[in-house]
Image (cartoon, rainbow, N blue to C red; front, side):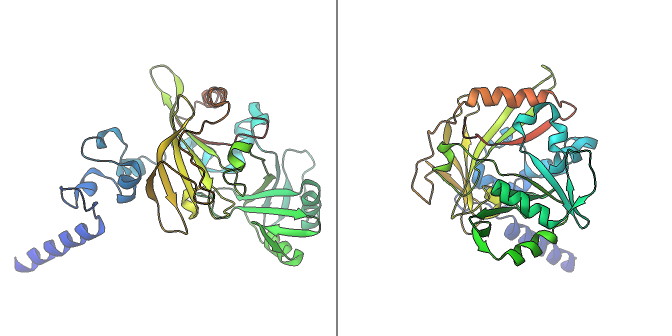
Length: 313
């Protein structure tokens, strides 16, 4: 009995240490574990005993995967996006190649066959910038921005020798190569190195049989990051009012991979621009188009779309 009691005590101490609750709250350290929330979620979303029922907890979120059932793979793989949204090609970046160990497969043509890295470099010379993304990565992992400026090549903003760039690109597997979208002035003046996308979280209303916008937030890179995702280690997000398109006073930030933390009255750390209160251009029209697109693929029930406002709005 003593041995079993000691084991129970060790387990209890481990739970209290691993699932630590914020110190300034009066209920026990196991509160968040009991209710299924990770400490980071509680901190960023300001969850407490009065509002926790309004949130989907982390335990149920992960247990619910795959949320779109047999169709989840369609939106988990970036390669499928232009095919999924074939009726909305004007809102999808141009896809040039799929790259695997066999070379460069031209997309959306009837020629077939494989191109060489020299053909890719020719496309880069023509376009000036290209985006290289892993087909099914998340939080910006593996993203590459490749540029040719004058006679210099750059990878994620840093000059690179052509021989080294060729070696890296030749070694890519399960990548897509697409156009580099240019963002609107309102966001590029805040962070010029990243695209600064808006995540639209849309859900299916089973009663109305249409999608609605559940929540959205705007993301910005920091410290010269070419990726705007907070999970990349140098980024921030600010929540957006889904009715007005104005940025709210709360969000999250992660600088130098220090971890996500909640922030209010958000000021971008690179330039001290106040984000709270800024309004996304043409938000009403963008929201209507996003919901229209979601309604057109309603075999899915939960859709997160990353939207960039382009130069022309």
